[in-house]
Length: 245
Length: 275
Image (cartoon, rainbow over all chains, first blue to last red; front, side, top):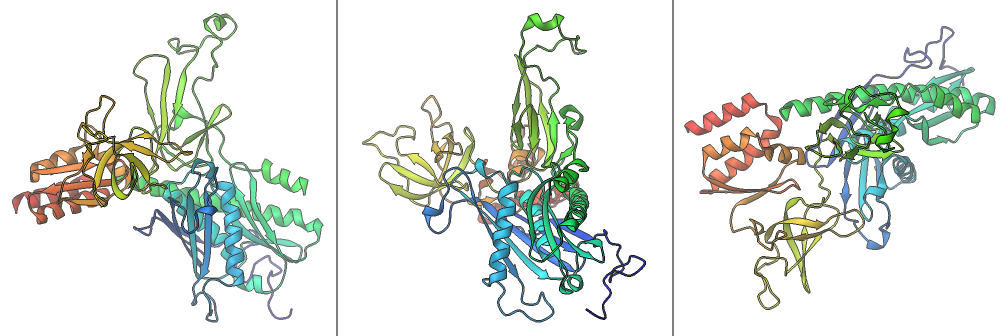
């Protein structure tokens, strides 16, 4: 891989960040009036929008209803204008289905589904601009949207991606770093207890390096948690000021 | 891999469990754990000699604290499950330790026993009506649950009518059931809501605030026009005034109350009162 140097000698990455540094995160809750819960997040140049409906009646076949917990239905869609080259199919393709499944596994771990048996919670996530770390941005946006909807959750779910270049673990990969072909790992964490909701990697990484990369991703997820915490507190305070507290 | 998991768990900068009293009226987020002020499990009055004396000598040795919406019990702590402000209500009398709950904002209603709600009749099947209350299941309403209804004297309820009733059965495992009579058999304001008027949706937090005893919004609205108004705890409000225009104005004001400060609201009311 000639040309692009992902980590310079002084320890700077392509966009000038340090190895463990996150991109700038901005988030807002309650962006849609008609949905039960919604949130928008920007992680660097990656922009994701999440919308939550529920808990409501099971749509479609009643046979899918679970007698002791709620069904979590996640749909991932990336806009046709989100990548460098225009995408043909925004949703329904293999990658979107797989992402939807991963989001479902992540949120089934965090949402207290046993409080709403025989009902359905819909989480729709759309990526408006994809610059690497789309899974992480989707999970972070969906966490905020679920909180906005008032659905009871065990804890936040914060996610971040991590990679490994030149013996150093990098946190929060951008598209350039992902496309370079090195190992990448996506981690979704429940910060207060330190439990891992989802850990996904489909590349080859020597097991001696795994601990380092995992710790980098976990630390980055905890930093994301600090930021999201601040966003939620501010939103609640604004809402309660208007409600006249 | 085991070391990695241990590293992740040890170095977490997460929330330490805090005393619930220290966090009252503050914003709490899911994942936080709260400690209750008294954790005794009722060893009885004879245990005083084995335990150091507490500062609040008035506390009984067994207090039952009620854990309200937004809190779950895990072990001997309270786990916060929704984001909002932590509130506490002192007990009136007796052995209780009061109620703790999280005041959160929500649009979707979850049926709770005893709540008065406005429902829309969606189907008539046999002896029951199916009523949509905005939750995850339609509630069932028996035709006998109206004042003065007998098997021969059925109530005049059509599909599409608005019903104001209360839940007698509302838990997560069963279909919710509602009735339009109170425990004495009287309607007490419940039943089919009359013709005309407008039904609209607001958030649950706004309804609770409007129904609070010290709410000025309702008094101001009452001074504007004569009106009939019904509040459902499921976020639905039915309003009726003399003309359609007045009804629409009232509906818009109530919907906008959520986003206005008290001053803006007073300005709008004074402008309307002049015109």
